Length: 449
Image 1 (cartoon, rainbow, N blue to C red):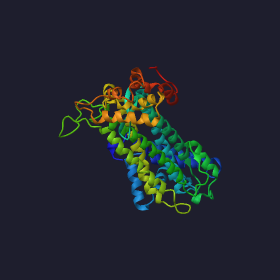
Image 2 (spheres, one colour):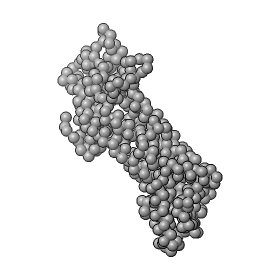
Image 3 (cartoon, rainbow, N blue to C red):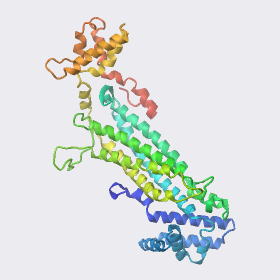
Image 4 (cartoon, rainbow, N blue to C red):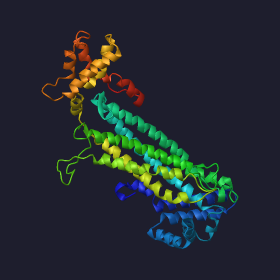
């Protein structure tokens, strides 16, 4: 991921320095386990640990260059690292990597990096949830127009809109927690995963100390269905980000103007049009969501490896693992900040509710006529006729409000009292179930209306 969309804390997880520290930790733990079970001299394991720790503590650009230099000759990244480590450890390095294969190191390291990245993403999700919860309670009783097909439907609560997104991100967090548990898997099983040259207790030892679980059957690599499920979870989270971003983008349109991203002092919206205040953050989030989702198909295709292993997945994961997690981390952090500062305009929302002359209350009028004894078909015909009369003449000299048209309709006159029509036009009736809805989403209803 380009630096523009990279936060340092996530980038550090995918740095060569962190990768090599994890590689050494795996090798050192395996060596210690073998010493505990008598396959390696304990003094040798101690030296590997002490000298290796010292080398990793002093790890520098020169060490990176040295590993790269070795790899340029060996064409093998793990061998290059082991050769560098041997230079630091000395003769006892012959006890490092005994009976192990490269995938033991690579796959176990990837599991550690993905769990590190996921822990950060879970914290990011908590920040998004905090922002959504705060704004949902702040605007629990803020009336706004609901839209279906992009067209005015019936009034709703802006807080309830946000509560729906909150509930979605709760589900997304649960999905990510499940994905983390599945991806936190260790494999120290040797060539083709048979433990022919390793005691299985070595794998258990390493897994426990790294916070992982042993893979039941590694076949030399950890099966990639785990990784596919992980990236699918990231893709679903990205779609949740985009759904909320698109809502804000629509609400910020000039014709709507119900909410907008915070506009900083000195910020410029256009190089040509000084009046512009564009939804650049949410547009950016939409684009980042596409990038994160782009990792899903390659991850699914990685599941089908040849026999016990091949490395067709390797080049894919070298790209999608850092890019998807870095991109999602940035997007979640941006989303939390954007929602915390989102400018919300209740007066504009109220004006938009009535901007069509009251036709958005047609559903309640329909119910009132049905309760008064009309068939649903007749009630629908009468209400639609008056709604269309209001709609088509809106803003013209002969135009009347929906309420006025209803009162003048001979099929309605005398059937229902004026106060019933007035009550049907009251947007607040759409808030009466809010306490129960908030209780379901947040576990509390908050202040009453």
